[in-house]
Image (cartoon, rainbow, N blue to C red; front, side):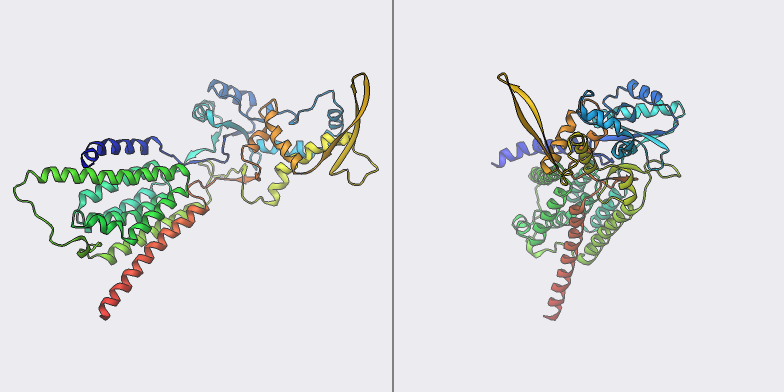
Length: 464
């Protein structure tokens, strides 16, 4: 077994490193899940913008000039005739246009599918060459303070660590993982993960060190919280974090094997007298180590909230631009400008039922039935068509959006899901969600718990 472990450990280690790099996640600020928004100054002709998009090989984009009636009805139908008669009074048709402008109406918007996002920079370059003010809502959102906090923590602990080869080698793997997943919850989890690594480095190869660490409550709880913290970001990030833990384990095995190989070449080999349980995990610097980690973790979380609550522009300019997007809470003024899915359901309902509503019934706002006649086997029979404005009707309307024969703004809205709420926003924080924010605080709490536990143990020893 040990023989196979020696052979396959380097191969598996290399595979883990490749996986971490291959599944790199770059945080991108995006207002829409499946679309990037190109904004162009409103006084520029639509043709010049579309020429730039076509020359950049961008297709299936959604813009104002390629919009039609977002419902599948025949132009020869009575429903279409009734709609045209009341078109000037149609609130939905007038308000849906606002999705193609920013809040100030200074910029016209084009929704570009994610599959063409790589070509978007070329389109922006072409427009900029023609001295057209434009930009894109999507941008990389990597804060280099993430790496600074982690490196400071590594530097502080490396001063007191006993085995720097193990410690710094493991820290390099963590730094590689952070570079591939630059999120604040990742940084916080990696900072507290330094503590078990610090313990391992201080009792490395002492008698019983593996059993001691495997049953250490602090190590177990820290690793468990780190795993949950990374899974709170996304499933992919959590799985790659497990790959990181495996790579750390394999790195230690490889280091262990290399040390044994060179040890056999020495005539005299020193042996540790004290077992793992007899040596301080903190290298007798528990207060300095824990205080430093707590302060660094607290600073990282504080900086996260500072950068998240700070208002940022969508592009670097003195004036702010606010674009339509999916928001958590819709302001009343935004709701009056931007149509919601409920507005679309109501609009479709009215078009389909207006010609058939009875003036003698009070409940025709939510229930409409009307007879029509079909010929079967040479006989004319009467049938009834029934419309009910209920959840089933709404679901059918939502699903039918995909059947529209053009790239409609409704398809962009549908891509956000049935819980879509339209509003204006300047930027979105993609560094963390509510669960990952809670987990960051758990990381800080566990450090405080360990610190106070150490203080209590030391006070008990003094009393004895």
